Amino acid sequence: MTGNLTFTMIKPTAVKNNHIGDILKMINEAGFKIVAMKYTRLSPERAAAFYAVHKGKPFYENLVSFMCSGPIVAAILEKENAVEDYRSFIGATNPEKAEEGTVRKRYATSMTENAVHGSDSDENAAIEANFFFSKLERY
Ligand code: UDP
Image (tube, rainbow, N blue to C red; front, side, top):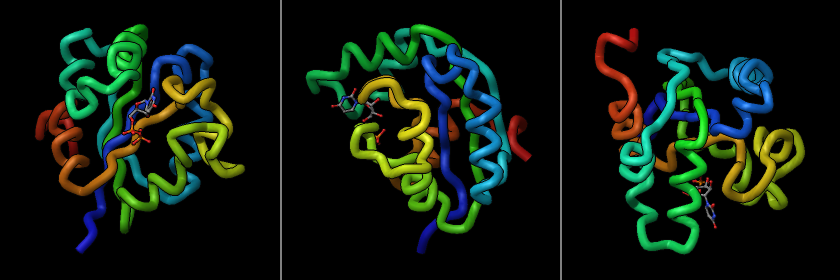
């Protein structure tokens, strides 16, 4: 069974380049409803914890320092089949491989600075949503 929630972040470069509005518009137009959202910033410790699954990989240190280099937007999104549909909607991790019309194709500037995060499973969507939002911050 697939769930109806996923978690996303608009990453620091996309925020710095003023793409928040365009990306949120794309998200809404693709049928995702925003059920929680915040403009915030990760400390080095929290960025390291969020990406702990990648610890030891060659890109990890760079990813962590990038993710705490500036503000981000974190959001919980609702849609049928949310996790899978959102992954298709944002496109491949490597923007050179992302399909036309995807968020990463439009707004990523590199493999690391690839505009947005999207959860890769229902289980991780729940963990990641809880990482950023209390129960009171969702409706
Ligand atoms: N990443 C990177 N270099 C790589 C692979 C990943 O900088 O070779 C970064 C990129 O920002 C990516 C994040 O690490 O979004 C998490 O990697 P993952 O493989 O989980 O990709 P995603 O699920 O975000 O597409």
